Image 1 (cartoon, rainbow, N blue to C red):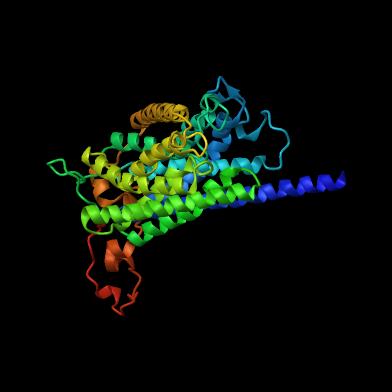
Image 2 (image 1 turned 90 degrees about the horizontal axis):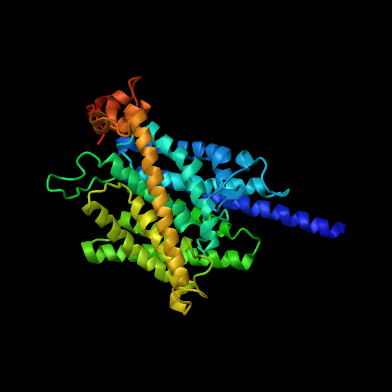
Amino acid sequence: MEAMEAVEGLEASMMVIYLMLATVLVFIMHAGFMCLEAGLTRSKNAANIVMKNLMTISVGMVVYFLIGWGLMYGTNVAGLFGSDSFALIGGNYAPDATLEMDFAFQAMFAATAATIVSGAVAGRMKFGAYVAVAAAMTAVIYPIVGAWTWGGGWLDGIGFTDFAGSTIVHMTGGVAALVAAVLVGARLGKFGPDGKARAIPGHSMPLSMLGVLLLFFGWFGFNGGSVLALDGEAIGAVLVTTSLAGGAGGIAAAYFTRFRYGKFDVGMTGNGILAGLVGITAGADVVSNFGALAVGLIAGVLVALAVAFFDAVRVDDPVGAISVHGVCGILGTLWVGLAHAEEGLLYGGGASLLGVQLVGVVAVAAWVALATALVLGIVKAVMGLRVSEDEEVQGLDLHEHGMYAYPEAALGATAYPGGPAIEPTGVALSEVPPRSTVLQ
């Protein structure tokens, strides 16, 4: 008996360590989002991007603890929402050494859904308005989606399958990002008088691609942790399909842009990697290795086409968040219905699962779009959504945060009024003509 208790205690401790590792890896994804978004936007808004990501994880964890967890995993009412377990108090949980770790792991997912919105509204949305949207995402909008699915709600009841969140996390964030981008409007100068999109390059491609690699790194916790069991075979299989889809997405995006535009596009290749990862997330545990390669290849091309489409319909998304997470989230969810190794249409399983997956996509998209529009409408009435034209031109760093992310780039010599700071080239800053205070 004592030996059995010791084994059970060891298993419980190992489960905590496993979830802790997965939680840390998903947490690192927020550093990835920060770098990706900052690098793909203009330098005058870089500190604003950093601040939004800092507040997303901070506010997201607190409101998910107070409200979101209970709505998602509390006692389910009519398959729609949880009714208890707010702040991890009460509910039907038996004593479980991993309850707190379960919460910490899931809180990272909630914050991920929220932060997807950040990049799509970069450069023009008020900081306070964004924080309000992030709070609503983690408190209510995402948890209701989770209650329908992972919380044992009505979509779970009809057989909807989403292993780690192609729809539940990524499409939820992507749809919210689409609604926000439409309601906030495009950046000044993004579309010309003829309606055609103009390129507004980000200020640091190396920084943004560092973000891509951090996200890829964290995805091993995102998908690998979603096994939620100490099953080495299952975890290994998930990590392989995740790796293959991400790699295939990068390859497809790189060569698609080479053939279409004549050059290998670095930024689109990064988005192709992320698109492949989003595409495999729903079925990483049930899709074969070749199925993972296939969805990655499709996602890498699809994301490039989607970015061009949203430009054509005048939806300004500086980082491609809607295309990566929204469009490829739909692809990944439907791919389960097509390529599930046992029940998929392509494997002779019929169209039943594909139909259920489609129902889930439509239902979640409708809820998220309506709820996000309502929240944004309230925020607009209370504080407004968009900064003024002068604030947008001069940069959100200065007007929202009273600082520059790169002060020497904005102020030249006046960034160091105290004396003889020397550039690495050996030229004294006092000898450099001051630049405009408006960042480029």
